[in-house]
Image (cartoon, rainbow, N blue to C red; front, side, top):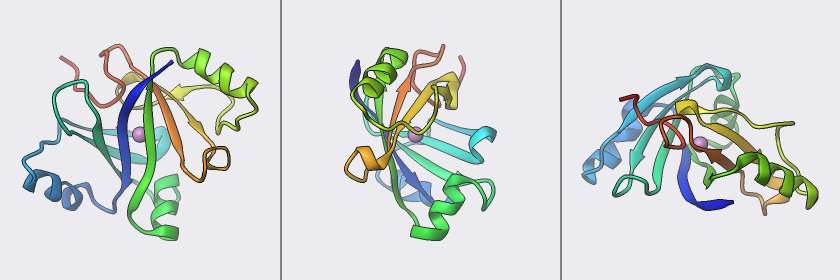
Length: 146
Ligand code: CO
């Protein structure tokens, strides 16, 4: 089941530049992690108390990566909205049964040991939705290991 908004993903050419806005608002980068499978480096910025929604800044590590192509085509901006799932395999199956188009044949690894799936924008009013199930850290993505 979906349990809330985990994060909003924003594509930026540079995390070093992009983070300045949030730091000027008194927010802090909690973790930066590279996800080689996605050709991306991500920075998570909590918007409030632990467990609440976060901003995810996405910086491409190569122009051929999905985020690199997104930036080239559309420029910086909102890339996806991530919903927290407490049972990703069940949500994956329920969406397929409802005829919703998913991007991947099965959930894959995300940042922080999470598992993720994506809903195709064609099935979601033009919005790319990520569904994320927390990793062993108990947090969907990006929380530093203790
Ligand atoms: Co994300």
